[in-house]
Image (cartoon, rainbow, N blue to C red; front, side, top):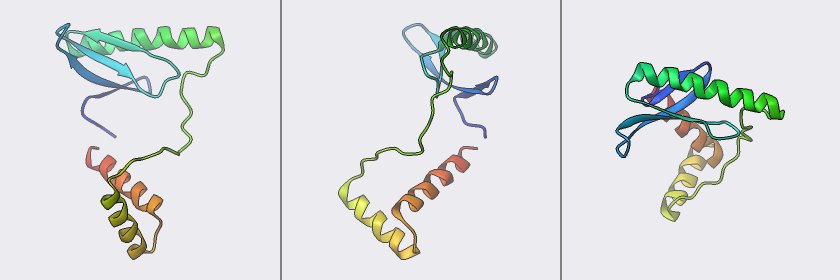
Length: 115
């Protein structure tokens, strides 16, 4: 999958943003058991700094016996406007599915749209 503002560095995803205070690109790895961010003034350097940051993070994890990736349970809590919640419940029932399945399908749809 290819998403805007996401770099894949050695199988780890990093979100990229522009930091106006430093006038640099900032990368931040997502889904790790700790923080690992990096800065550069161009994309090529951002990849290099990302690899350096990731290498250091993984070394620290090995030294401390910590798994580098967070575990995702597949559960998360969500807040909706009550009227949206009601409409979604009705839509799910009309399709003969659960609200959970309807939301999962909607998320999958959005992920495919950015691919």
